[in-house]
Length: 255
Image 1 (tube, rainbow, N blue to C red):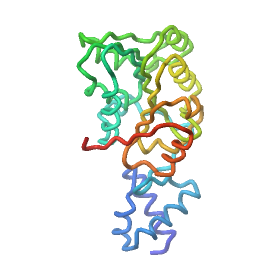
Image 2 (image 1 turned 135 degrees about the horizontal axis):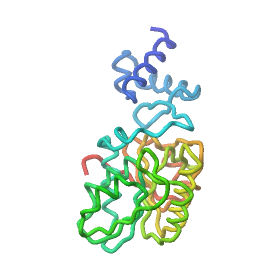
Image 3 (image 1 turned 135 degrees about the vertical axis):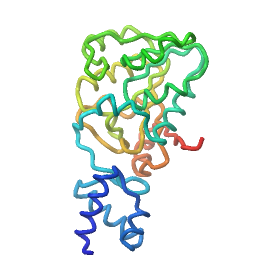
Image 4 (image 1 turned 180 degrees about the horizontal axis):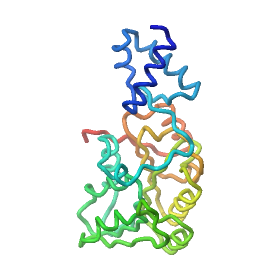
């Protein structure tokens, strides 16, 4: 098989499975891992994919549409659960926390501590899931409700600025040394407001979003006090973020 044919096959596998592993590709094509890594590097330089620690994921467009609620909240992958679990463990009694509307935020709910605290959210789905928890006070941000059940407009922005938050859990379409970014300026502005009213900001950054820059910048990476990612994250992306003075921790699936 010629190299161009092999790389076309890698793109087919990416389209089908959403990711490829260098070791599995080496076995499939009966090549060394170093040869596969060279293929992946060349393909990344051409913008065809994005390399990760163990393989590659599809190249992200700067304005990828968000997943519909039926997919966004369907459960999440094990590495995303590991990040959600670690994030939830940081909540202490009497804290006031902002939990956003991303799927990885929704993934925090099963792991929330059994203590008294307050949640501020812009997600109708999250507010509804928590409304019967006696130990948790829930405040739902007001504004225009989108089809997703999330609220991120100008009214929501102003509403949020009335509060002071202890812990802010943010996410984004892309997280890199350049900052946290999203597909729309509206959501970026809302995320920025959440950070500005919070004493501590924690970013939930699964490997597929790390090292990626989206269309609208929510803020510089230095706004983040702690970034939680997973074991498959690019070492280069992690080191780039750490070089900006941001603490990065790795959530492990089996912990």
